[in-house]
Amino acid sequence: MLETKKTIKVGIADMKVAKAPNILRTAGLGSCVGVILYDVNKKIAGMAHIMLPDSSLARGKTVHSAKYADTAIDALIQELEHVGVYKYHMKAKIAGGAQMFQVASKSEIMRIGPRNVEAVKREIQKYRIPIVAEDTGGSNGRTIEFNPENGVLTIRTVNLGIKEI
Image (cartoon, rainbow, N blue to C red):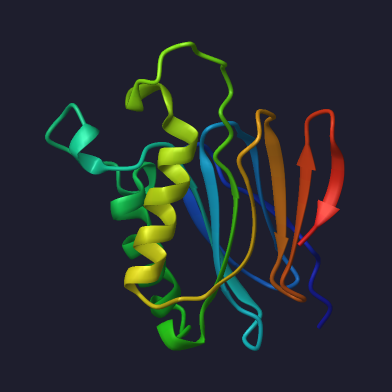
């Protein structure tokens, strides 16, 4: 049976899992970080669009797990394990974390992009998942697409073109 290829959109503060031939896509990565955990042998991947570094920043009692680095990575690993991907076979790619606005202040609060990248790396390293490629920092927004078939992350960066990692 021939499967048709779908592009599965991952929204802001959202996460999804896909199996080849489907593709995962998220747009609007400014200071947010797109995290992809995948197993290229099983051709299964999960993508999270993380907005903030730490769930202690949540205002309500309910924490939306895909929104924060400290909760999203764990939730994404669980989603992947649920569909048969072992943690020790996972690899990671990350993109985003731009400093979208130039500010004179050296306030940590205004450094949200770099803080997101640091938090994502810290969380991924907790699980000993290797980060095999990244495209982070800068001051431009990104749209990313991940193909679980071959493990290629395509990054479209505003004013800087397209690249694959």
